[in-house]
Amino acid sequence: MAKGKVDALLGIVFGDEGKGKVVDYFTPRYDVVARFAGGPNAGHTIIFDGKKFVLRSIPSGIFDEKIINIIGNGCVIAPDLFMAEAHELEAAGYELTERLHISKRAHLILPTHRVLDRAYEAAKGKNKVGTTGKGIGPTYSDKAARVGLRVGDILNDFDTKYQALKARHEQILRDLHYTDYDITEEEKVWLEGVDYMRKFHLTDTEVELNQALLEGKNVLAEGAQGSLLDIDHGTYPYVSSSNTTSGGVCTGLGVAPNKIDRIFGIFKAYSTRVGGGPFPVELFDSVGDTIRHIGNEYGAVTGRNRRCGWLDLVALKYAIMINGVTDLVMMKGDVLDDFNTIKVCTAYTKDGETRTSMPYDTEGWQPVYEELPGWKTPLTALRSEADFPEAFKQYIAYIEQATGTPISIVSVGPDRDATIIR
Ligand code: IMP
Image 1 (cartoon, protein in one colour):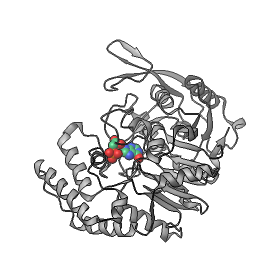
Image 2 (cartoon, rainbow, N blue to C red):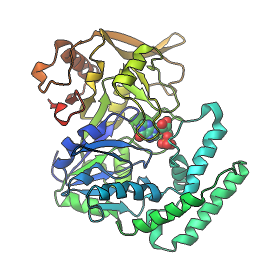
Image 3 (cartoon, protein in one colour):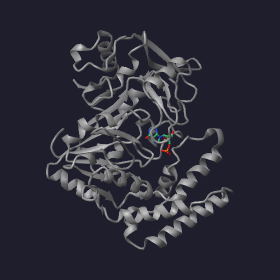
């Protein structure tokens, strides 16, 4: 961490890396925590003072009263869900309005964006993306089509703009013959949410952030989703609709590349994916079920079963390259405690071709595994690297060697102090 710089904390595979667990280690070191991409498709589970919160749009620095929290221009925000999330925090005693600043340039998710999300998914049939249904894709589509509504519009002739965009969506839905929906109740709460948002600082967060950096403050850019869900670098079209990788920090917050210092890439000791799309390491056997069960791999937003598999070094190396990861953070090593051997995917193979770099299209590739010894020791109670079993030390060293990147933090259990800084 350097003064007047931005560090990024990113999930670098398919999201759900368990970032919430290390957030309380990271956030107190920063003056500002900023979200730069995504919206309520995220579900960051954070356990604080014995209470569990699922943050969707609000940055994780909200639990620390010294920290200013920013929802940046690269984000999309659903006023109704934002209001519900904020009310929950307010009820738990957290003050929000002074410490949560929202970019006027962030885009609004309308109720009809969510209907469009469902309609587009239904039209795709078996090729559906398996979205979270939060209207993410349609909202970013409107942004790119230059017809979207932005947070700043709340302050200026909002109703006219809202009705125009809603009418446009209704026309598309009629064209798609997707008319069996009713947003009456949802819209009421959504409009209350719009009103509620007026009491926050709706502002030019890029100016505020750059000013903070000039004053020598430290900023943490908090990622959402994962690098392989990035609209440019993920497993397109089975991706989300924003730039979830480190490049998105610059565009999604309005900070220049030379302001970025460390990039922390979080991954799990194994792989998971929610939703559709290729996933070469997916396990359909009892090993996959065991990982899901022990790792509690069920979606925080949708409750869906997460698809599980062994660690994929092809994907991990690609994500490290795209993001410029300086430090790896490995989560949930303890989930693999009971296995005799641990597999690691080192290459993909298809039609006689084997490759160790990420293909353009990950569909149909089979994993090539190396097998490493399991540690067969419960890790969760361990608090020092010196106590790690030899086979776990080997697993860490193997990943570091293969990726050329240090694993600076290892988490071996759900407790706060089960996070070992190396
Ligand atoms: P969308 O972001 O709702 O459009 O969903 C696109 C894809 O990204 C789907 O496969 C989702 O399951 C996945 N996705 C979106 N947000 C998250 C997340 O926070 N964690 C894991 N997967 C996500």
